Length: 280
View 1 (cartoon, rainbow, N blue to C red):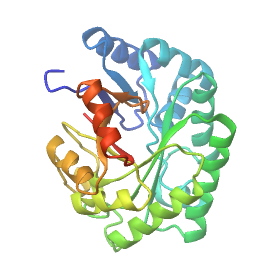
View 2: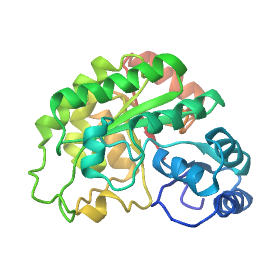
View 3: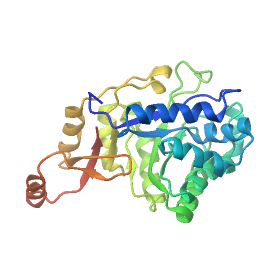
């Protein structure tokens, strides 16, 4: 909180024995100490795993987590939403229909979530399209996704390190296609965390309208050997250099006032340009 953080993205592995109550207590403890912080937590594979360990229905698990303090769901563990791919490259992770069902049920409860795609490994181009199509159909049904984020597989320090990494061109092309296909998604997020500042900035010209979050700490792609950092000033500069107006948002894509309202309106009138969003 002292650094201005307003959200925790919390994801982990599939613990074989921890009960649902343990996760409820974790959420409650965080909210007691930091009531204003949104907990963007537990990927669909984790949620599905909770139902197996607790032997409780999905809806009940989600309701209990929400009461304990869960604010929104990330789209982690999506990889490619095609069972052939998931069975070949994951161990014990939820398959496609159940991954989607976690989001569907969360949306039915009034919750919001994000959707992701990690590409550039063993999938075909047709399977990338199938992934996008499954997301599009669920969004048509529920409208609960706030944003889509894609990034290329980072093979270093993984058991699939022999796979050549997809380059920036492949990333930008895939994101542009996703923006066209997912026209029912209100936001597309640039993945500067995996691509670096320059390509992350260029992604704003390839369909993205959001630079994502300014992170205090990141432990996922960095474990695979990919480490990129941006300060808030660098993020604002990346947006402004393209002639766009940087604005802060929360996880629900509600714009936050980070300058006097009159000044913001005057600047917007003077420079009638689109808005790229950056978060604290």
